[in-house]
Every structure is written in structure tokens, then in C-alpha cells.
Length: 255
Image (cartoon, rainbow, N blue to C red):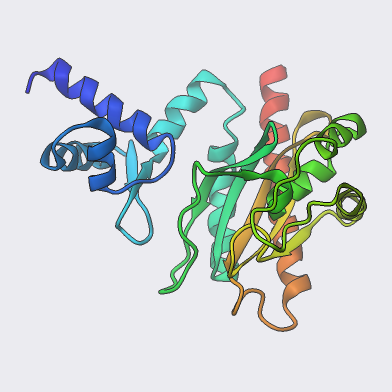
């Protein structure tokens, strides 16, 4: 295999993983390359930090080196790089998965996830999209939209991901008002059966909600009895710290 061909194939693999985590077999099928070739290239990319294995070790996702490269294209705006150490601290405190997500049109997109050291845990959602009104992170971002943008969302199609998803526009409007007032939101089995989640907004310059921090886990253990408020406070504090770091970096770039 020539050097140019290796680079082309490695780039194709990175483009594949940009759409979300995948195992060797899935990547090989998507990029139409032999599994042995894909496995070898993934090993090299992992050594370079361009990809990393998920907590389960069965899938690969985009690594920190690629995040750093992206940061060079948008100085000061690399929210994943800013948020990652705070997500790690949140996972250590909760013992459950934490992640970062953004609003994109009518969807919430999961940008990053830090896994917990649990035998039973939620799968990696990095790169996945969900209707914003079905996820805790999407709900807190919708709640902090400008009023006109929020109303535009409410007049669009409200699809139920599962039977528990709020799809009545009036009920959702009332819920978003309450979320905006308290700053955090819990969901229980509203986007996937068996998963509970809590989220809080991350603010950028101009007090705009630019992302959301979330923590989620199996509903049978998360949240533990009596811990709901404490967990929500930890998530909200993590979001505040990320906001402070992000705004500080943006101010530094502006000056």
C-alpha cells in the first residue's frame, strides 16, 4: 500500500467515525475495505490520538488529537476541548456517564461522552441525533432559545421517540417555561426506554445557551433515591464552570 493510499484510507475512516462510534466490522463495511486493513489503520490512528476506543473497547470514536486540530481552525471555540476535563470530574463524582450536546435545527446532537467505570452503562451516543424535545439536553437548550425561535420549534412536528415523550405543544411550552426558571431538567425514559437523564445549559458570550451538559444512566439506579437534587446541582455547577471557561477564552480571542 502506497503512502498516499494509506492517507486516503485513514482519512476515509476518520470521516466514517465522524458520524458516530463504530466497530471494526462496521467501519470496514462502510468504507468498503478489508477488516484487516481497517484494523491496522485504526491501531495506527489510535497511537496518534486521532481515534480512541470507547469504554467497552468494542468501538472507536474520534480522539483528542482530531479535536485539537479542529480547535486550531476555530480558536477559542473548541467547546469539546474546554468541557472534557469538567465532564471527567462529573463522571468521577457521579459514577455515571456524562456528555456534551448542542442544538442543530430540530435535533440535539451529542458531541462528546465520558464513560463511567460500570459493568452496566449506557452506550456511547457521540454523533447521534435525537428530536430536541425528547432529551434532557435538548429540552434545556429549547428552554433558553429566544422566544420567537422557541415558538417556531413548537409549531413544527413534535415526534414521539417513545410513548413518554412530551408531544403536545401546550404542555411542552409550559414545561420549557419551568425549565428556563430552574435551569435544569430531568427526563425518565423519554428518548430511550430504561434511561434517565439530567441536563443543564452551557452559556457563551451574550448569555446564549450554546451547549448542554448531561449525565445519564440506567433508570433502575439513576438517580438513586433522594439524590435527584444533589445530582442536578452537580450537573448545573459543571455547566457553570464550562461556561466560565468558554466565555473567558472567547473574551481572550476578542481582545
